[in-house]
Length: 246
Image (spheres, rainbow, N blue to C red):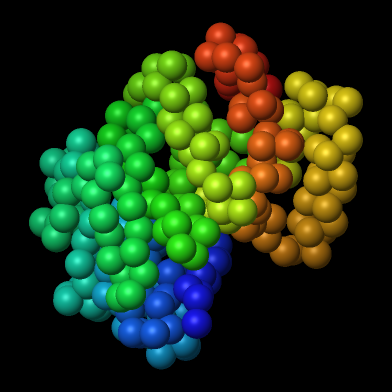
């Protein structure tokens, strides 16, 4: 059986994510904005938490870790090495400090770390190649990308290019349900893109039903996300500055 990804809302627009390996029963939380929804779903499904995978240090991605570790003290905490001190000040000591190319195991599932600085300097993403899964945190959003808070535009551009080079069938899971708002900006930047127009009609229909807009394939993002379609770093930077002011 392939991996099972369970997605749910935390706080107002954060996504909570649980990655479950049916073969071994191992289960990982991907970022933890708030422990309560995770604990409820783990209990309902009868899953035991084995791992916690953190993408970056912002509070809306790590604030729930202490309570989740209290409930599952055996769970291994995996964090970006470049943000270890600041994350561990909130969460306690981690099992692993991760850098580019490091491996992560969730039961029989094998992931690899991709460093994606820009949103924060130490941000990382997790790519599970065999399962075609990408957990991108706040670097790549559906139809958008994260704000450049700590890094440079060039760093964020390079990070997005790394993710865009992954296989097109890769399914994107990110940190927030921003697709509809991102899509409105995308249409203003790329109004003649027929694929984007169709995509936004689908997005609007999903949101009207209260349904999530993720996951989405990288192929869809490459056809419709203006931040991935930018021709160079200067064009990307201009788009990001325009989005900041939108």
